[in-house]
Amino acid sequence: MHYGICILNSIALRPLPSDKSELISQVLFGESFEILEESTSWFKIKLAFDAYEGWIDKKQQIQISSAEYHNLQNQNPTYIADLVNVASFNKTELLTLSLGAELPLFKNDITHLKNFETHFEGATISGQSAKNKLIDSAYMYLNAPYLWGGKTPFGIDCSGFTQMVYKLNGYKLLRDASQQAMQGEALSFIEESEPGDLAFFDNEEGKIVHVGMILSNNQIIHAHGKVRIDLLDHSGIYNVDTKRHSHKLRVIKKII
Image (cartoon, rainbow, N blue to C red; front, side, top):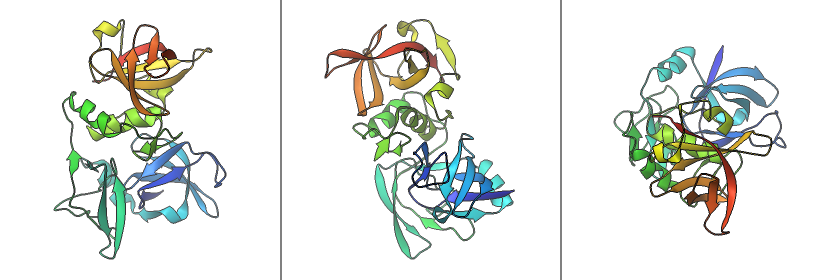
């Protein structure tokens, strides 16, 4: 078995080994993975964090040993808490990193993987935070443009947004909205919810296609065109700009 780690701020994860294949997610700096298959220029991988699978360009990662990989899984991860900042990579290059990038085996401002050293002096976050801290993290992504498959402040989709907010605070969500909807405890009414709970929305076929995070005062923050704040009622999301409902409510889940 072979393993790797991402060495750029964010790289494309695709369903097929081709640059023309769609973006289904991103692998962020410091994220580790298992290598499942190999082609001429591509690796098919399974991410350690959420078991999401896809193809990445070989040139955008480095391989690590089995011992290093398993050691990472036993560590409490540290994430960059700045919207964007600069790190020094292997003492010779500067690397721009954004919110949610992972600093593997981080201690005394330095990562400690063999052949992979990053020095970072900015804000970091580690461990589990109180539920109310989810809201602070969510506001960090406000006005980030919508990007199918995105997971960064430079472009993010609805489930990437909720996953990253929970991840920054020490909680694990799966990648897609339909997967996240299978987690947690279902609530019967909006009135039972509290800030930080997740609301899921379906299409005409009954498929979960959207997710957002509940705020106070009947508001919801979600990625739709951009990460934005709208109103939530028993019908769904009421867009404050168009004055129309944009998504039909299916279920509310309490994750923590």
